[in-house]
Length: 453
Ligand SMILES: [Zn+2]
Image (cartoon, rainbow, N blue to C red):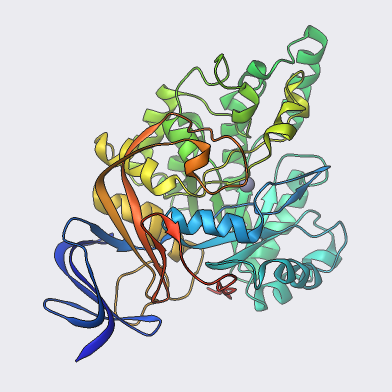
């Protein structure tokens, strides 16, 4: 039998297996894995890893935040994702205060559908825990928003403990997943006020204004309340060992607790808020980047199965917007880009540095994110699953600069960082959409993924 497409003789890597063989595709699906398969089109992968398409469960494309907007449109951001070996992602619906959740979901889909080039889902943000809003949680779930974002930080998004508990009860009621930004914002606000009085407003003070204890305390509190409410909870962007330890304790107790970290916490050096060659504002994100000792601890937690996955929290702002915060870090739009660089950074700083195995790399970047976020047909190289496949050249070296990447900003936090191993070909539902690092797919070909557990 002749298949539509066969990837020949690659090193097939999944979360569970590692062997040499062929992957055959018929239409949009994986049709067979084996030896000596024949295809109308064949791609030689002798020198390459063949892995499931990466899944990024945490991105912010064209997202309005306060007076700002993130820099990547749905079109541009998903092209960058595809070039980085990402074949599905989960973005957010951020309803206005009091807005009907399904209406907000539909508005968000109107912006994304026909623009995205990879498949996508949406988390639903619960910015207030009023009975009227929480009563709409089942309707949002039925429309495919299976996960709900809860914030313990930021004015307008912050949920106090009683509100958090009510929201978590509602999420548990539909069997959904809570995804949570965990920091103790009231205490951080007090620290800021003290810093303002003391004149500590330059960008380099940013990490000092959010000490690790303000994160760890919130992780413990959120996971405790989630357990009480019977909700499964994923803590977003863990940045330090203190917070990871709270997650480990929750897991030891048998709670349905999960953790995410991001490449900026795993790879960037200690001096990023002090350097002369790059402005500290480029690296302002919440929680802050905490340097090499913490990065080592996070890698250990990933290797030990305490932290479950790597996403990006891709949230780029233009250099002009970042500059506005130069004199005062409290006025800097927080967020870094990363949608295109995660697989390669995790390979270089995780696998090649000896922190995690190749299988674990696939598990934390591709397979487990698909499972935890409930993405149908994604995350596996198994017949019947979507033919979302990445060919990864483990030997090719790239030194990052903004002009090599596809994000709509003129800088990258990974400027000058050299990775060994990059994705070279991305296949989404059987269609080759990236070849030799260039996007070659149709515009707007991505689909909304209705997620349910
Ligand atoms: Zn985020």
